Image 1 (cartoon, rainbow, N blue to C red):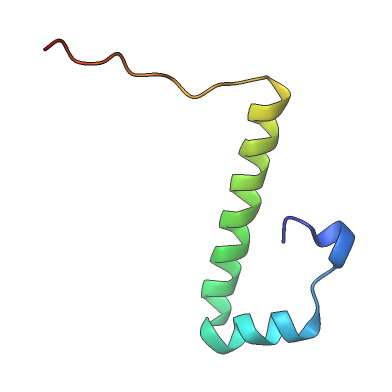
Image 2 (image 1 turned 30 degrees about the vertical axis):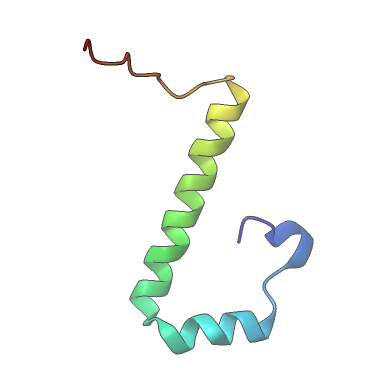
Length: 58
């Protein structure tokens, strides 16, 4: 899905997904991928770095 502008979604890939997941699950997976993709684009655009946890004192 993240490369849909380059590859579209081939029919065989779509059929493989539909064989494994219900329509509702397919919608939920699609929304999840789209949400993660959006957050990744936002994070990259703002040069965000994951927080680094300080090591616990020995």
